[in-house]
Length: 269
Image (cartoon, rainbow, N blue to C red; front, side, top):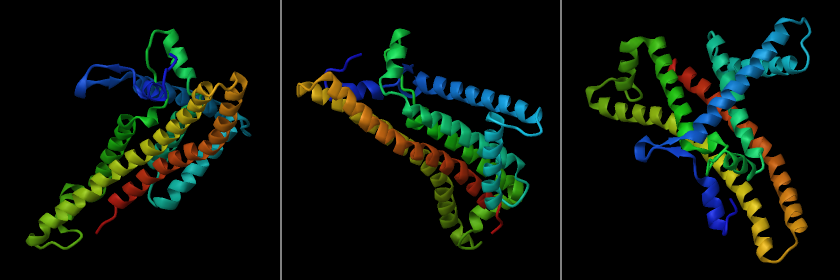
């Protein structure tokens, strides 16, 4: 689809392929891309595991995955000092999956829509982490794990007692302030987690769109097609190199913070 104006171009690229309406609307592109990339990452890790288990000196993909896993395990170990087997698996899964999703932002901005259009889809957003629904779903899962860690560590009675006794003490007059502060603290964790990833990736996607719009602006200024294409390639490549750091950094933050939250939830006050 060729946009006739900058606003139409941006609106077209910001529109999801949606099924249903209102509250029950499903962003099909986010669901498909998230599940597809999860399956892709799972397949790569399975292939890497087979190579590592079948060789005393793994190389290539197996060596790289082993390096990433050991690095993740080291990061988890510096935060959580108990049995970290599950948390390392959680952190490794989050990191590799989010890196895969974030990397979709490096694809040419118009390419996914052109491919989707060939299959009859009017819209297709290729970046799942630029959809607040996707990042919020992951953050809700983290919230469930944080609550579960607190219950496992302290028991139901201990966990509920901490809600009314910390941080101000166990006086009945302080129960309501304690409850309010604990609720705010608990809910702020998934909200900030979801909004941070979404905001950074949404902003990065928008910058790629603005760079692509330079071509449209030069077209109206009667610039040659070669000049428009060259400017888009230069600016887009420059931003892509910088954006790789954002892709990795946001995945790292979303990997580390859940481990921090779970470690905090298991602390006794």
